[in-house]
Image (cartoon, rainbow, N blue to C red; front, side, top):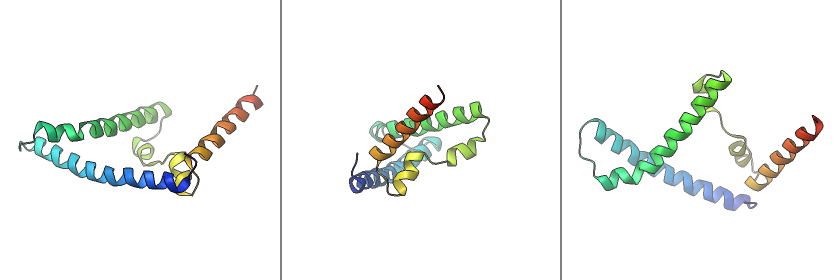
Length: 110
């Protein structure tokens, strides 16, 4: 996406949905842990989100283990794309620059 304003709007919309899903996920988790009723539809409504969170955290934890980094530090770190977007760069420009830098690094080391 090359339109920063559109990209930011999309990110803000996803962030708002994330807040709603996180609240629901937390309530469902608490209900299940404490033996309160939680309907199948309610659990299903947060299942994909919970799997996304746990899969991402597991990936970061495994990478930190391989790289010998503290898991807490790896989980706190932001991606280059996130940082670029916060600084006003759109995703398309970020990925073009990253791809060009990798290509240049690959040709200069050959």
